[in-house]
Length: 501
Image (cartoon, rainbow, N blue to C red):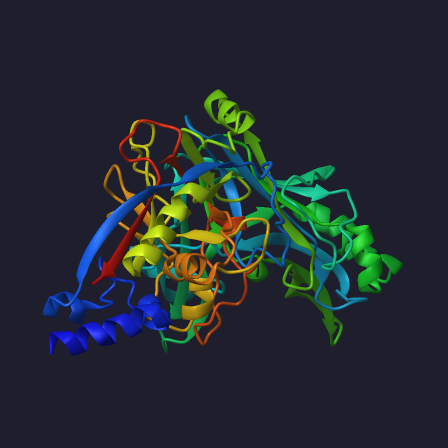
C-alpha cells in the first residue's frame, strides 16, 4: 500500500500539483498531499528564503475620476508616520430638465446638498417625538434614526466647505488624477459635520399616513441667493437651454474640509444630489397663492467628478521614499491607499536556484509558497484599522498572478491571508504557490511583484472584474511593514512547504 502511494505521489509531483495545490491553500499545509503525510509515504518540510522588498513611490498620485471611484472620499487625517492626507471632492452638476419653467415670481426658499456616506448600520440610535406638529398644524410622530459615519482616523470635529468651481471640467471621458487642482469661486456653505448620518420619518397621528420620509444621509444647506440669481432668475436664458451650455455656465462644486486632521470618510458619489425648494405664484379665480415646488439637480454618473488629494509628509516618510534601495531592499515599507506608496517584492535569483536544486536533486513537490510580511510594531502600533487586503500583481504589468488566474472562481482561494489584525505585530501572507511552481518546474520568468493597499472588485457572480477594478483610489488605510534590509527577525521571507520521498 505504501509502495502504491509512493508511486501515485511521484506521478503527482512530476506532473505538477496543478489546481489542487492552489485550491487548497487555506490551511498551513494547504491540505495538499495530506494523504501522503498521514500514510508516512512522504515527509513535509518547511523552508524560508530571503526576499528583497523595497518601497514603490507612486508620487502621491492616482487616477481618481468616476471610472475609479465607485466610492469617493472626503476629510483629512494626520499621523506621525505618513503625515497628513486630505481629500476633497470635485463634481459637475446638471439640470434635471433643460429650459426649466419655475413659474411666476419664483422664489428660492432653501437649497440642500445631500450626501450619502458609508455608515455603521448596526449602530443605530433612535429618537421619537410623539407630539410633533407637521406643516399645516398636523399632529404627527417624528422618528429620527442616527448612525455613526464609518471613519478612518481620529474622532475629531470637521468643518465642511462647499465652493463653486471656476474651471471647466469637460466630460466623463477625460481622465483626472488626484493631484488635479481647480480654481474656486464663491463659497456656498461652511458647516460643521458631527460625524453622523440620519434618516427621518414623519407619520400622521390621524391615519398613520407617511407625511415625510428622508433616507439616511447628511443634509447641507447651501446659499439660496446663489441659486436664485444663477438659476431661477435665469429662466429662459440660453445658459439653461442645454447641457453643453449649462456645464460651461455653472462649472461645478468642490467639497472639502477646513481642518488638516480629523478623519476620512467614504460616500457614494452617484447618490449625491442638490434639491432646490422654492415657491411660485398660482392664480385661480382672481386669487393668487404661493405654491411650493422642488427642483433636483443631477450630480450622478453623467457628470465628471474626481477626488483631489493633498499631502503634507513627515520627514521619515519623505526620507524613506527619497532613498529607495531597489538592490538590497528597504528597512521599512510604507504602504498607503489613495495614491500613497506601495512596495515591490523580489525573490533573488540565488534563492530561486536553491529551490530549483531541491526540485531537481530531491524530487520535491511544492505544496505551499507564501511571502510573509509583518507590521513594524516599533513604529506602527496604532489603533487605526490595518488594511485587510492588498492588491498584488506583476510589477510594471497589469496581469494577475498565475495563482489568481488559476483560482479566481474558487471560493476557498485567498490571495492574501492575515493574522489577527488587531494584534501588534500582525502579518500578511501572500500566496504565490502556482507562481513559484511555474518558475521552478516550467522555467517561467521570475517577475517582481508589486503590492498596494486595496481590494479587487468582483462582479455579482463573484468573478474578478479586472486588474484595474479595485478600491485603491478610495482606500484610506495605511501600514508600515518590516522590509528586508534589516536585522529584524520579522523581515520579509518566502516560506514554502514541500514534500519529497
